[in-house]
Amino acid sequence: MNPPKPSLELLRGLTDENVLRALMAHDRLTRAEIATRTGISKPTVSESVQRLEEAGLVADTGERTTGRGRVGSYYALSPRLGTALVASITPHGVVAEAVDALGRTHGRVRTDLGADAGQEAAGRALAAAAEELKGRVGGPLRLAVVSAADPVDRATGRLVHLPDAPFLVGALDPPSVLADAVTGPVLVDNDVNWAARAEYEHGCAQGVDDFVYLHLGEGLGCAVVSDGVVRRGHRGLVGEIAHLCTAGPDGQAMAFTEVFAALGLRRPASTAVDVPKLLEVLEGRDAGADRVRAALARAVGGVLSAAVSLADPETVVVGGTWGAHPRMITAVEEHFRRTPRPVPLGAAVLTLPELTGARARAVDEFRSLVVRSARPAAHG
Image 1 (cartoon, one colour):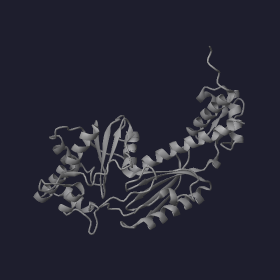
Image 2 (spheres, rainbow, N blue to C red; image 1 turned 30 degrees about the horizontal axis):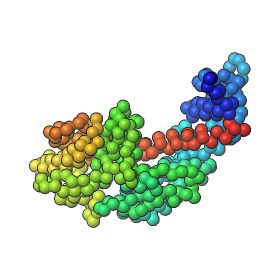
Image 3 (cartoon, rainbow, N blue to C red; image 1 turned 45 degrees about the vertical axis):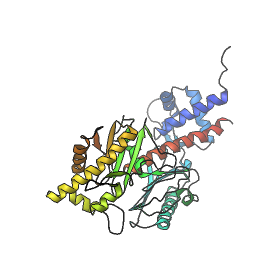
Image 4 (cartoon, helix red, strand yellow; image 1 turned 180 degrees about the vertical axis):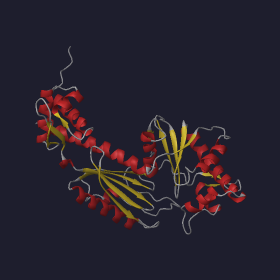
């Protein structure tokens, strides 16, 4: 028995998807150029462009080809498609961007926050940034991707407050905060997970499907990438390493976060690491600085040994404001290579990797949304 032939509706849908994806890779294309890039016949492309134009997904730019031969019209994705919101919530502030399906940024808003600004201030800053961007771009924010410097419940997108968490944003609920500004889904994840995805796609971990990303900054975090996927766990709390047991300065076991208290490297009245003070230690050349560096290397090495035992990574990437410091990398590497299961260690290379990772996901999600929105047009 011969297999059933695909329906005309299905074929039209596939054609429309290919046309849209071609226009997502280029600012503008003629119908002939779309046909060349997709391998679809010119008449079929012309029919698709007409359907997509009627559906409001594609628009004639008004530009025409020049030179010899038949004049062609340039088409592009419709400006009415709107944009996607990308936002990063850190101890220092909220950064938000609007990006389109080609990955172009159409606006950026930054709002500074105090280190202990709290849930309400962070929520107001996030909502205000989204509203400002929506006004600037003149179209809907179709979805949002949010990076947060706090644990995130994977089921709800709400931030989770763990004991001794240094950034008291409380149980901030970005999906609820953005409900009035964003028309579609809101995807929220921890900043370290987004940073790991960015290093995997664009940074030092390209081509490495199994690695651990250790973030050492004001806060302490870890992401586990296995088979090219960031593992989030039942609640989304994989990699919350602050209370992982490791070696303290005197050799006794203690929680990782308590090592910094024991070394006098916490900010006053806070559990956050005092990064300026720690960087001074890393640059120091006296015996005291050497002892502190050695203690930090032992503590970090204990965390990495646990991560290697559980995740079996090919390599470890270390990022963060002090974790990627050359002296820190060297000290940890010297200690770690003497452990039973050492793996290669390298420094993260991207600037603002959490925003880079979230932005890439927002573009992918927005493109998928645009393609899905074309399917009803193919049914007409």
